Length: 99
Image 1 (cartoon, rainbow, N blue to C red):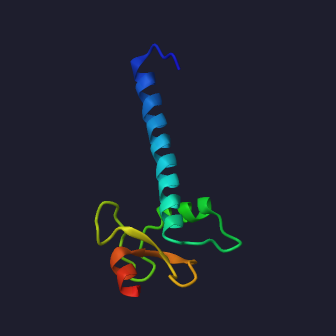
Image 2: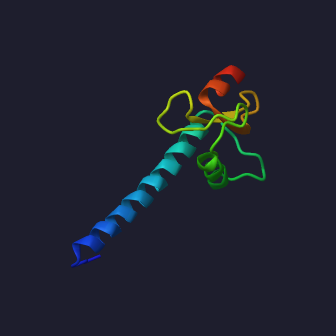
């Protein structure tokens, strides 16, 4: 990566850091879900679940817009506590109400 042009180097590092951050965020999220006891059905895989989770823009129960960094409107991967299987993506408030 020996860029002589500082702008090219800066752009490369920006892309690298974004991809590195997203890769770590994916791994961290999956680790947390596994720790919580969330299980996959036979037709599911962690990458697909993660992509669905990060692209979900509205709570599937109340339709409020999900906003990162906003505690009550942040996304939560809802799961059945008895079976461990994923139900859907909800805002934190709806997830707490559902239990």
